[in-house]
Image 1: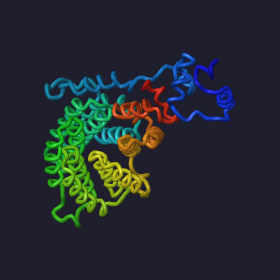
Image 2 (image 1 turned 90 degrees about the vertical axis):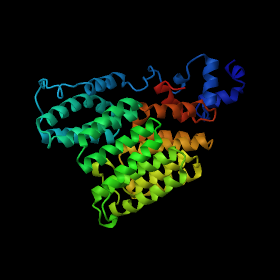
Image 3 (image 1 turned 120 degrees about the horizontal axis):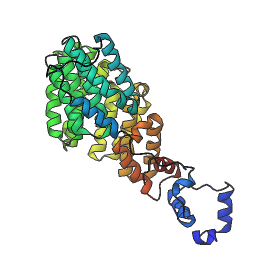
Image 4 (image 1 turned 30 degrees about the horizontal axis):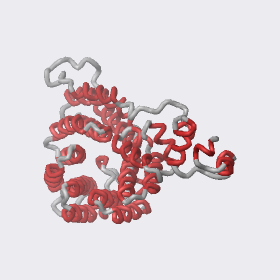
Length: 374
């Protein structure tokens, strides 16, 4: 009866039941689930309730509350112990490392206290405590962009820029997140202008004599400007800016992470792939992806950076109608940094698009079922 309702032979059903024949299409799984009147998730062993989109809503509200506190400028008592500058710098460094490993749930928990403590430390030691305050705002902004709350990220990065005023390196570091925020808000033209101003302000007088820190910041800002130019439809400007960044990257080399930029030749290749995706040039995007991932520097990029890149390449494959490779990139991204899939709205959108395609491999069905995406 099952075979008849499915439109298959009894022999076909028998082979599937015995594991002789595999189910290699999501559309077949969905049809079987329809005939059996069960959820597709049951067929991939997912008997638990689907996970929420990110589980980060309450955490974001706590971050919002921390950013809404004005005790320090209003001259109110700190209301708690002031963390020493050296300890504050270690705490901020830990938050950045946790973020780069894509442990976003942990960063969500850390950020509210980190912000409050950094503000108190800065109030107690305005000069020596400034770097930790700027970095606390920076990592918070980077996190909020990942979570899809660009408006709140803008508030955090605006605070970072104000706190950094007067220090070239701190301003350039904060400007990296400003570029990410402006692009996330769709303000590509403004992003390009601001990034170029920040890049040329930190650039050494003679590029060949530049210190790795300056070159890393300048090159990363040029990458942000290039991504903004591509988003604004200016393909030639995007390419020129990346060429300029590439020269600096060769001097810095891979394996460095000055001011949390991970800048180097591999980062530039990854950016070239992102620009190609933005320009709709799938073949070029995939070519740059293959070059980047075969570099020795690929493993030195932070997990969140690598996983975000893989999401972009998944989108490129989707544009080319290659659902199989799009699913492969999603699976690799999830293996590299699971939170990049579970916490990022853009990842869920790509996953939903893949899993709706009848040609989608069954390997992606369990992930989609776990996240309640379909």
